[in-house]
Every structure is written in structure tokens, then in C-alpha cells.
Image (cartoon, rainbow, N blue to C red; front, side, top):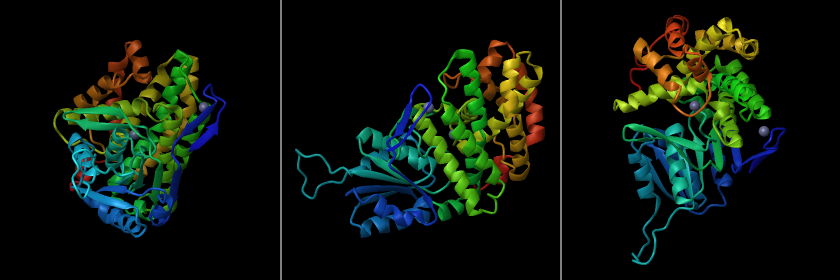
Length: 403
Ligand SMILES: [Zn+2]
Ligand SMILES: [Zn+2]
């Protein structure tokens, strides 16, 4: 269990995660970390099995604690079909079929992968009441320590409550070798935290919403470290990979501490996830989460800059002004990293902002602008500056082989 005392009204935060191991060659420690389990069900996809799953399987077998392995076809989206497959393959038949006995369930589910596999196993773990953990293969999103999973159900994306990982094992050498789009996705998911915390501060002051300063500070600190080192990601330098991995895990942890994704998800996620959902509704495979969130972050930055310039509310302006230096650092980072865009069509872009307001029940700058009767005007106005300042290449053009 990870816990901390706090000055906020909750007074104490805790999560049932037992071990977070982020180190070079961390997967070699998997057997030792999971030694108290006896029948571990390992789930990977073809890619993650190759880069980490096979080695983890050997280690668990040697230790005599592996039940069996399921390798899904890659890329394994967190959809109803894959969740069904993991569920069907989770139990083992007994040697002699006994009509009165249940099949043998594992005592632990180990996901080897990043966002999709983690979310898939998290759901099965929650439904079966079996603990799970993850050997992460890329610092691509902040869901390792999260408590919810956005899952694809037909043409809908639904966020479900799920288990939180008992063990998070991040091998830095494996993460450093992750495909480049996944590294960019991790940065995209991380830079958005400034927006999330600013939205949260605004709602605290306007609506009296619960706010935890300690959690907000932790998220901001991790985001700062991530941005400082992110320009070295292209060279795959281990300190940059470590900062990104730890920042993303910490952000997930803060979601769990808080009991809601408030500290890690605001305007940028609501817009980015709306674009994701638009793809899902059209029967397309959604883009990488963090790439959409990155584009949502650049959009939110321009919305805030415009509001800061125009508002007559001195308190609101003061809140936004605190974040302007961070926005400048994100501008600089984007000129180096060039996170690609997925939405460049004006109509789709504006629709994402308008629909994003009600993506979930959460007070953000989108709701504020809506109540002022200015949302549509702002959405139209930021399109050009965002495209001019932040757009370098479309994702599909930069990574045509990516599925
Ligand atoms: Zn607190
Ligand atoms: Zn995210």
C-alpha cells in the first residue's frame, strides 16, 4: 500500500499498489516481486511478448509460479472482443472434468504491455476479483496506476471503474526501445497536466470544488521534470525515459489518491477524447491517446491565452497568468519534438471543442466560456493560431506504417 498524510480535507490518501519498480533491467526482478503468487496468468500481444513477455514468461516458469500465457494478435485494442478472449482463457480446465467444480482460475493476472493491455487486464481483474499487475513496455500514457479504463464497446468508448495495479514494473531499457509514436504519446499525455490543474483551480474558486494542494503540486512537479527532459527523448536517453515513465506513473497515482481523474484530466483530455470518440463512432481505430491529448493541450493553451488577454475578471486572469511561463515552455518543447496532429480539418477541430465541453461532467474553461456565450467564438478563433504555431505534420503522414 502507498499512502501519505495530507493537509486537504481527506487528511490521508492511500492506494493498494504495493510495488512500483522503475529501473534498468527491472523485468529481471518480476519473479521476486510476484513470489507470493502461485498461478500467474500472463497476457501480452505479439509485440509486447517479443520485447518483454517471453523473458517474463521464462522467469515466472523458472520460479514455478506461471499458470499460462495468452498472446493476443497485435495491436490488441482494449475492446469487448479482447476482454472476452482474456476472460475465456483466464481459467484452466482441471485434468478430469468435474460437473460440480469450477475451472481453475489464476491467482494473479500480469499484463505485459502499455495502455491497451493494461486496461484490458484491469477490467478482467476487477470482474474476476483477482489482483493484477503490469510490466510496462512504453511510457505512452498515465494509466499504469489509474483506477478507470476507457474501453471500446462496439462504436462506443465507455469509461469503467476497474482494479488498480498491485505491482508496476517498468524496465527502462525496454521503455527506451519503444516505438517513437508511443514516446510522443506519453509526452502528449503529460504536458496536458498544467491545463488539468488550472481547470481544477478555477473550479475550486468558482464552485468550491474539492482541491488538494499537495496532489496538485506533485502532478505539477512531475510534469515540470518531464518537460525538462523530454527534448532528449528522441535520443532515447535513459534519464529522459525515466522522467517520462515516473511522471506518468505518479500522475496515475495522484488520480488514485484523489479518487477521481481531476488532477490529470481537464479541457485537454475532454477535447482529445472527443476526437477519439468521433473516430470510434465512425468505425475507425482511434489514434494514440496521448497524441490526441497533446493536440488538445495546444488548443487549451490558446483558449487560456486568449481568455487571459480579454477577461476583466482579475482573479481569473491571475490564476491563468501563473501558468503562462509553463505554456511558453510547452511551445518551446513542441518546436523541438514536433508532436504530430490527428485533426486538421476545421469543422472537426471546432466540433471537438464544442462537444468536448460535455464529454464528462467536469467544470473547465469550456464550461466557463459556454456560460459567457463565447465558446463557439473562441473555438473558431484558436483554430488558425494553433495550426500555425503547433502543427508540423499529420500523424498518418509522419508514421504511415502505424496501425
Ligand atoms: Zn490531499
Ligand atoms: Zn490521459
